[in-house]
Image (cartoon, rainbow, N blue to C red; front, side):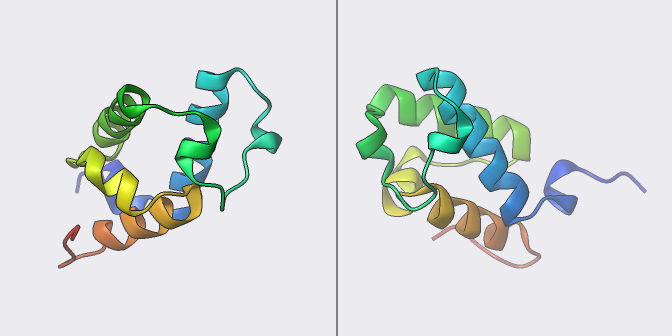
Length: 93
């Protein structure tokens, strides 16, 4: 049986990925990324948000609409929501 990333990844792994992505993008230490701080407070513009959604989509093997990043606007909220979505019979709404 083939196991994909989306079959084994949880909120903690997604949170770690998001923190690494943002810290690399902003060239700051990952420890400086507060999980409950809104993405806009990091200075991420719409292009950065769209790129992050696209790369996360590729990593997780699902389509993530950049609008979801605005709706679930912190690392903690987005990682939790994406992990819920990856559970069987869930939808990203």
